[in-house]
Amino acid sequence: MPYKDPKDQKRHMNVYYQKRFYEKVKKQGLCIRCYKEPQGAETLFCEACRIKAREYQKQYSKKLRNAAYSAYGGKCLCCGESNPLLLTIDHVNGGGTQERKQLNGSGKNSVNRNFYLHLKKLGYPPDYQLLCFNCNMGRARNGGVCPHKELTN
Ligand SMILES: [Zn+2]
Ligand SMILES: [Zn+2]
Ligand SMILES: [Zn+2]
Image 1 (cartoon, rainbow, N blue to C red):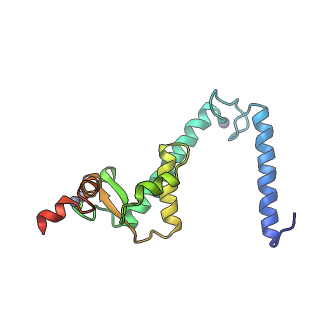
Image 2 (cartoon, rainbow, N blue to C red; image 1 turned 180 degrees about the vertical axis):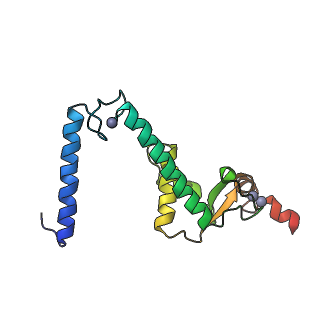
Image 3 (cartoon, rainbow, N blue to C red; image 1 turned 45 degrees about the vertical axis):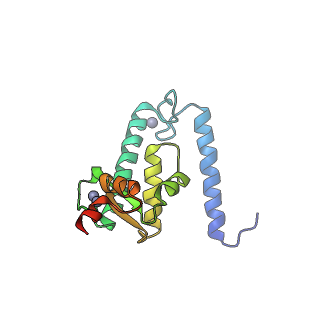
């Protein structure tokens, strides 16, 4: 297969060997992370690695989420709520849900992770904003304007 860039060829080869290596380990029934312990029943990791990998993914998701939140000001644009557990990133034009669906992965966490990763890759574009769930919901139910705004206006 011809490659314009020799780097591409190298990358392709690495992926190829990595894949073959994984196949081999998989066939042997060994954990694809430590290659020592047997795989768990429903996973390619052993029990210890599964927990570690899950913890790592959780931390990674959290880091991505926090980075996105602080890039968008760290608090609800409408009411100033700053508890990260109450915040969500919203598409300014209301396309967020659909976009999240498009980026859907295998589970709930990966949806969020892919979404935050996507934002990071785009350099946190201004067509997103940080809102708390209340304001987000209020906006959705009130035709795109949070009821808070109407009270103050
Ligand atoms: Zn392992
Ligand atoms: Zn709010
Ligand atoms: Zn509000």
